[in-house]
Image (cartoon, rainbow, N blue to C red; front, side, top):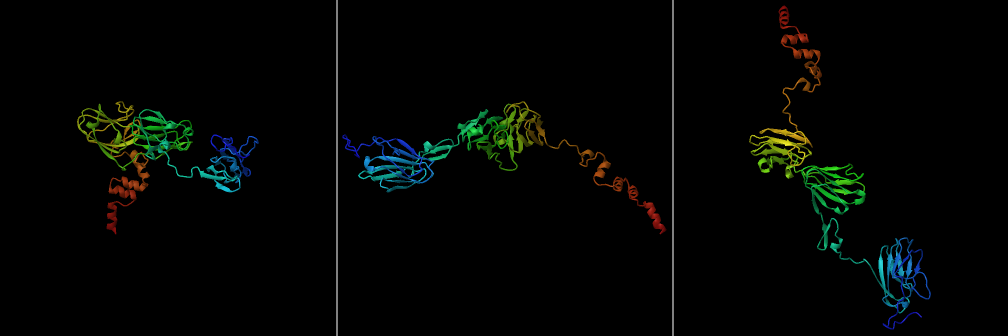
Length: 414
């Protein structure tokens, strides 16, 4: 007896199937339907995996089609690294090459013979319409049916430790000196990145954790105006594009002091930072401090202010504060001076204090006496005597020439 009649629907009763089976092929495989009276191996499950450890290409033969109802289906997934072939029960090819990774849905449309008529279609063979919203993640934003780059901006003015959920974010620093701490590179894993910009008034330190390095060092300093990508390969951190944007090799800016002074303090910020030449103008109403950021920088200062008050440059202990961290320099009105900072002190780099003429020991010959300097310049004993001669007669004596009187006498005799 090869079939059963369903008295409720008139169709053939399908036998009980294993939901899932997994086969490691070492030879051709002939599948059978499950039978209660004769349990056996090689059962045809509804989902059949050809395992990845298969050692070659083999054939898979389907069970007799006339033992089940039409509509019976099988799903075959080739997880091996080899092509496989699928035949009907009469040895006729259904799928010539079941490629590695391919998944086929087989369903029976005619069961009048053992061979039957099997139809099939391949999963993933047709182009799909992805849901952009479902695909969006860190760094990606759904715009209609497409994905676009997404860079969320987070402004900070206090120390912050980056987490693995901060991928692709831009951290915009707006405070004084501070630190952004990176996660462990091994935790963040390769290709994790953030972006950072220092829009603040002092140095922003980017610091890894543990034994991680960034650009080969223990930390990286961002000066005001600096920005960069910060990327890891899973072992260390690297910056990409670090450095301020310079529009020219020499920059010049005019600052009207009365328009920016607050409580007697002018704090350089924004586009006023990272310039070279500064001209300060306007009428001072009080002694005024110019607070410089705590970074190494030079300043060409032209004090064109008016009023009987001073203009003093300092690096403050706190941003915008009146207390200097180190040495200060007051620039007199109407004068131009080159200043530089070492991050703490403001120093005068001009040569206005050097005495003219230079002393012998400042002349570059390495000598402390005039005679020693002449020798150092290549003078010989005779040459030095001629150089130091106070009169023509002394010079003639130095070179061994006769005096003028002796020369006249000899000329008369001859």
